[in-house]
Structures are given as C-alpha cells and as structure tokens.
Image 1 (cartoon, rainbow, N blue to C red):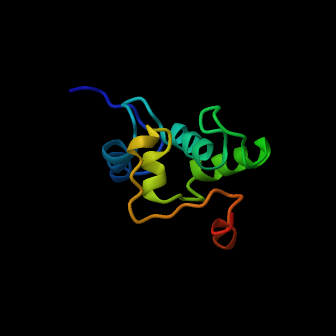
Image 2 (cartoon, rainbow, N blue to C red; image 1 turned 30 degrees about the vertical axis):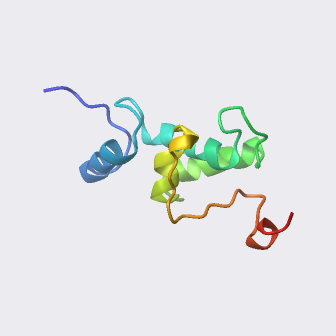
Length: 107
C-alpha cells in the first residue's frame, strides 16, 4: 500500500476531504493550499497582479487559514491557483478586497 503524505489536518476525515476535493497533487499540504488561496484572493496571483494587502497582512491571513482560525469558502479553496479559464465559481460572486458592492457597478 502506498504511503500518503499527511497534509497537517486534524482528522482522517479532514485529510480525506482535502485529498479528494482540494489538493492539486499528492504532495500538497494544507499550509501550501493556504498560501495559494491568500496569493489568489489578495496577493499577486502568481506574480501577475499588484497585491491588495501588505506582506505582513497576507502572512497573518495565511497563518489564520493554516491554523484553521479563518476558513475561506470551498470554491475559492479549490480554484485558487488553477487555470483561471476553468474557474467556474457558478453562483458565487467574489469581490477582491478593494471592491465593494456599491463601487462594483460604477465605471
């Protein structure tokens, strides 16, 4: 039987869900996913955009997600870091941190 990498989650059930639904590969850990989510939502998106939060704030957010004190939604966890053309967030409407519902409709 193949030895599976442990992602750092607390329970076998959490580990199974993470592996089956969210991890991009067998070596990815929850800490890796937290870093990817923070970079995708308010960071540089792999070096392609100006970050929306300071390095210190992103590090704090990353730590909060890693420690499971902050939990993003399932779709952002899944789609962060994947090919944007396949990021089907369906009925989810995500605002980047510098946007508001009021400002979004303005040109």
